[in-house]
Image (cartoon, rainbow, N blue to C red; front, side):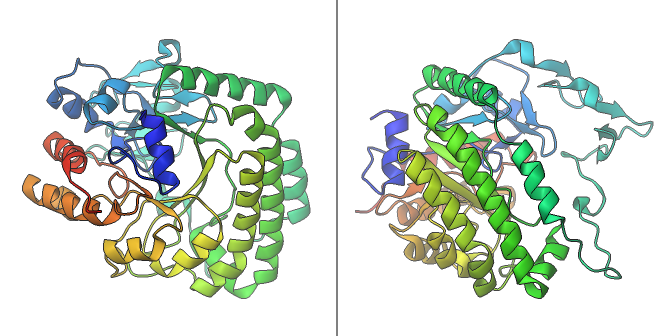
Length: 406
């Protein structure tokens, strides 16, 4: 069974020869570029500068030999033509982040070092000395309760989206890039570059307020965005479908640490119909390509509505938020939607527990999540800078050797 076949069978809830595993197929299953060099060294692999593709979260693209050493089955391809299975040395330039990390980035000119050592990116986001990622004030979502939540001009939005449709030249370039990635690996390829465009447009707080106060506006907005996503899929998917396995469609973070941000019936009313249209169109256009949703937080009460969206896989499976166990998550989703992630609690067990504690929790999670297939293993969200290499190695090797009860 090839790595690609292993992942595809799991997404179809079919038996696999071993548990499929992921590191870095998308930008919430990845590893910090600060942790990555230590991981490479601990695995006994040759030194290399990490390729920092996401320079906001500061994530390294895992190299194929690292994926081999951890027995991972998935690969990353993005819509702006970047992949962890293609070397492309001409696209990567050295940058040392003010002496903190010898790395490779695509655009060193986007960074500047301020007098106090803080690094500024694109003139706005900041990484102070001692920080491990970039941020902006209020996470880029300031809230002014003295004014009504802003609304988009929907007519102008529709016209702008029409002008942003993939051109034939763009489709051909992306298809060729995906083809090259397919030839370079037997891993299942996740493609990120055809997004639904939904989520908390304009900020989590004001958009949530609009969902409650003006649902008619939200329905019209989501109708426009769904129409655009389907039009994009009709252009792009026929060209890339032979070369990709999973389509990263959306990255919603609909949960807090305790509960869903929106009431479940509100999410079902305003989000599910639009996502269902998009997913159904993608499955019609490319029946062999699986669709993928990223959705952080305590979203257990949204799971039925998410299943009704017709996504094939849900990530990151943050079972530690909201008071529901990983067993409850599995039972709720069993053979209805594949779960991708949830392999260890990345807020407590992984950073604060011992290696033995990590191994114990991973084994317990895998025994439950792996039943009846429909599971791809990785941690809950990214492996952060402070996580030592021995814990990362224990994470993956324990998952690989844990026997799943039949």
